[in-house]
Amino acid sequence: MPSYIVLLGPPGAGKGTQAQVLSEKLGLVHISSGDIFRENLQAQTELGVRAQAFMNRGELVPDDLTIAMIRERLSRPDCQQGAILDGFPRTPAQADALSGILSQLGGKVDVVPYISVPAAVLIERLSGRWTCRAAGHVFHEKYNPPKVAGVCDFDGSELYQRDDDKAETVARRIQVYTDQTAPLIDYYQKRHLLAQIDGTQDIETVGQHLLDAVKQQR
Ligand code: AMP
Image 1 (tube, rainbow, N blue to C red):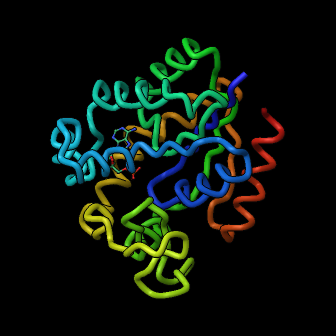
Image 2: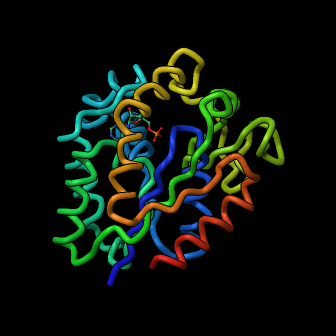
């Protein structure tokens, strides 16, 4: 049976960083809804053009567009063993849709590690974050610097600061998270799927707790 893991947490909690590590350790694909939107934006596809204004304001792309995109992604052959979802779902309606999609695929959400980090820490993390152009690998100028400034350790591509990691948009994204996504903590807790992890610890420690949580619940 396929294994699906949903990483929950505010923007800047470290979901992307941890999802990459977990993906290698478990041999499951890493699906980042934000990365898919950014790729579509760069390629100026119809989806990218429709998502652009919402992303630039730090708001959520409407559920219907987002759900259709994830449905398509999860139905590809590389998801046959399951997937690690990073950034989706972000609303209870998306979470309901996800369980419908997964049941059609013969699976279900197995565990929802929730990486918790206080808002003050998030602002500092997001505004110091640098992302690689080629594959979305993330670094932090202070907490997780690349070996060579401005260059991705993994693929040598250029690092850039995402438009929505600039100070004005960061505050909006955290507010949107609190209003629209934080209700998922309760949603998954009620379904006995939540595993809370303290995201203020160093990257390796968070990764170890995450792996423990996944192994316990799968
Ligand atoms: P992220 O890289 O996860 O921070 O996502 C960047 C932006 O993409 C978000 O601020 C939203 O505008 C959009 N986005 C990503 N995932 C979702 C989602 N599940 N629902 C709605 N919008 C999303």
